[in-house]
Length: 409
Ligand code: SF4
Image (cartoon, rainbow, N blue to C red; front, side, top):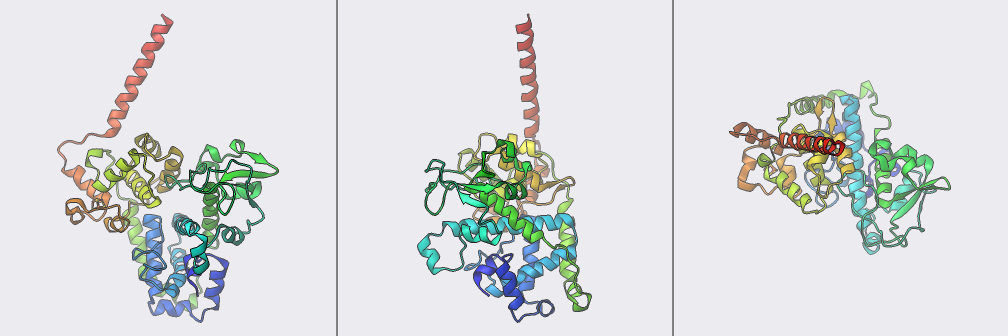
């Protein structure tokens, strides 16, 4: 078993490694091996935080889990998800596996050639394209001007257009690619925003021009598709895995139902936001790009307090967060019964360097949403940001009416 398979456990080679390994999943589960606990963490974090990375640290290197536990936790996580037997849970699990994988891919792609030659635990873009049988369907677009190199994903949503960066359209990291229209339509969705609609795309010789970040977004969809493939599956009744995992599945179900349907405070009072969220908003207002973890934490918080995608877009106007990315992320975070993704816990945010535990208020609540709820409940007076918006809209409408009347006169 190698670290690359453990990092990307949905790869065909990882499946083969698990099949070839002299380990039995029923025995591992019966023995409550570390892979079982890691699998539970994988699913729990996928459902509640949109990531499957271990809280103990990045794999490999910082994680508390070795290669075997990390790799085997994936098939066990799939068993847990199958036992949960819920379509939204499958969708969110697959999306979280894909998001985490692409975070790792981005880091791998930033590893320079020299380091890559000594570390086999990194993938190149060509490896990924080959894994998804896209090697012939995707080609560097060498016609676009060099200099518009690779960039970050922006606000954590589906990136539109390449950002500024060091690479041009030549060399290892072209800024743009051409992807055959069939795979493009299969892997992308017009729901990601108008810019993804085929009519708004440069199409030539049956191929669509995409930026490097857009290609990575399409690959993320390919990963999610592969992870979701075959889920849920029936477990062999005679292996006893279902019984052995019963209590873990019950815990996951309880956690989901507790977290899923709590009523949000449904008041937007920025003055009462916890410092971690205020810091993120101020950072975005300074036009500094938020990392994927920062963006996810902020979006989950804003959705968690009851804001609609439209409200979040309006709230984040004049920040580094782009409307399309916000829409994608907030819609993903919301379902018709309310948020299924509460913001990450204070502990997780501290691990990401987002929380500085100002005034030791980690003592007060376990996550930013609970902290905000307490502050709203304790406040004498709460001013809802939405009220200001409504007043502005009414003033604007009145001003327009007045202008119309004047011009008619
Ligand atoms: S303790 Fe929690 S609520 Fe407070 S700043 Fe940190 S993450 Fe935010």
